[in-house]
Length: 301
Image 1 (tube, rainbow, N blue to C red):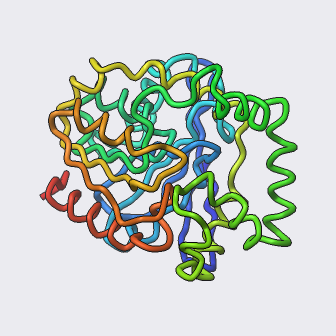
Image 2 (cartoon, one colour):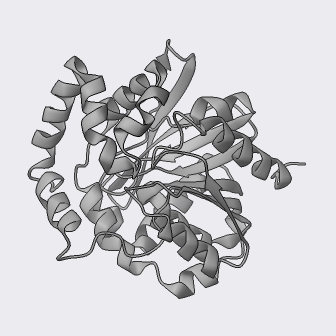
């Protein structure tokens, strides 16, 4: 059964559905009616309700298919027992929806899932784009970020973490934005304070409203070790890598690493103050460059 939701603030309609195979469920959404489909591997703590950059792509005639990745939303965590298993389910979803070929967009912690898809099924994707994406081992056991993530976003504690964020998000979104800024950007908040607009705070607020970690984030961290040089070097699909030098969440070394080892890649270092390249300064550049790349590699000419 498919449920259609409507967002009056943006005019964006989203169709929700589930695909079930061998007792496991993959939740997904479809936004847009364009005949150039994009399969989206959303970032950490997100799900099939992801929205960063969607409106602009819909206006340009693209449709976006977003599965909740393994362990997120209503998608079974067992799908994430390996990147290979998860990739097979994402491919099965495309078959179920009748898409022989799509573009592939990978955001942040969705990088490993997309990289594996492009490696394993090159004929199914016209392009792959890595936006602020993880491309190698990320948080490692023993480092402070790993230990912090294990405490805050463990399946047994993440509900409380997001409940506290929700309270601040509702009553003091600007304050929460300021407090969390250093986790996204290497640029001091005071340095970019004058550039922050009301629309940026609103986009940040909406992001927090749709986010939960469930078991997905721990799966993400553990699977980054499976992105080997062989996988990257075997990718032949035209690849666009978009990343900010000021990214504090996923250091730009991930972009350089992917660019060094994916022969078919183009690297675009963005004029953006941090990880959230889809809002604020430089967001229009992200859309324009990405759409230009897609236009050069259309599925249906």
